[in-house]
Image (cartoon, rainbow, N blue to C red; front, side, top):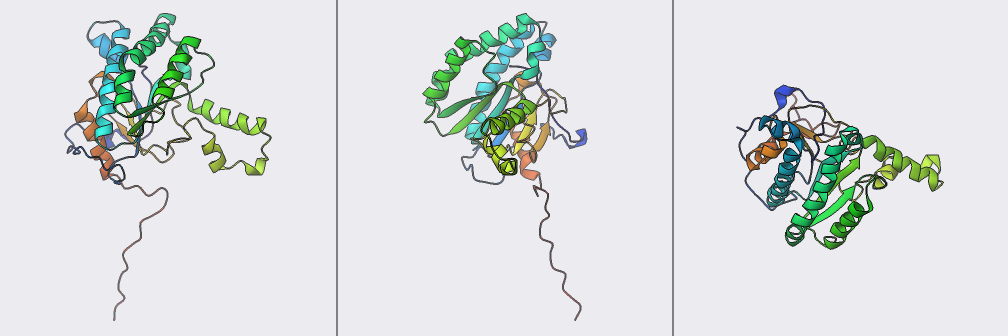
Length: 268
């Protein structure tokens, strides 16, 4: 898993692991539980370095953490989970690390696909597939086909993805289809974004202590609640998940509007 970044919000608003836990629940319609959670899984390399191990071991541990996180979010009623696995910019990393990440994806599919399929996880891959190997594309196609009828939780893996790329590819589709300029509005673009099958993320989590978006879901995260934690991704367990969900449940979501104000009675 790659170490990729997130967005704005003062550090003072970052909840700690001492926040009250959210009890596991299956009610995905409750406003206290986000329907869609997006995660930037940051900190694999630093986790490995702290243990005097190569970065690859951090990425390997990060995959295992992701599988546990899918189970935890699923148990709590989250219906969509989108994770940033490899960004458009990650090709700049050393060739050895990039090759290791590609191999790790294939190993992860082989190791965990049957489990996720049996657990009702639907897998979707979002991003530019044109520059990855045929072998990797075939593995993705197989995972998507095997899980296409599952409906407990949808796991969207953003691989070779960038938020700006997503907007550009949607605009290119409009040009290629000869769409009239006046027909291109927010609804049209949303239907042609890579994540068009999912609602916009309600909760946006970034591990590893950084506070920036790093070109992830720029369009879709316009009204996401942001949660930052110092916890490195390989250590991100159920306590951290519950802290993030507890923080989300306390947010006042107005989407640019205001709540109705109480009527002040006039003096008689």
